[in-house]
Image (cartoon, rainbow, N blue to C red; front, side):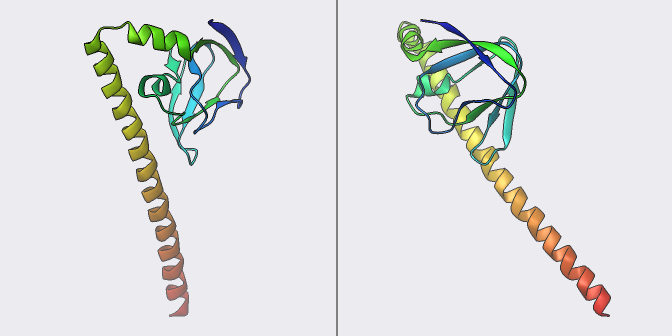
Length: 138
């Protein structure tokens, strides 16, 4: 059965790896979707859905959902989503699965790029520090 939920700013709605028990539609407020290292992948708002990927591809949560602001939402249980999805046209099912997998891969790519960026940033700071020491030594 669909139920109404409320969330406070900074509240974790679910975490990466949690069982996908259903999806959420935002009625008010904003929710951030975060990668495993905390990179904000997107911010969602009114009338947007999240948590649906796990239902479509049959996997645990692939991101962490954290409330950016206080708000309300509607929780749709996994069983209801599965019923609607199974009753959908097979072409629509295939399209949704393909988009879900692509979105999951795009999130992983963003995570990898962020990791590379952080490594480059650290290297830049180190090289800059070495250069300053070299200049002072001359």
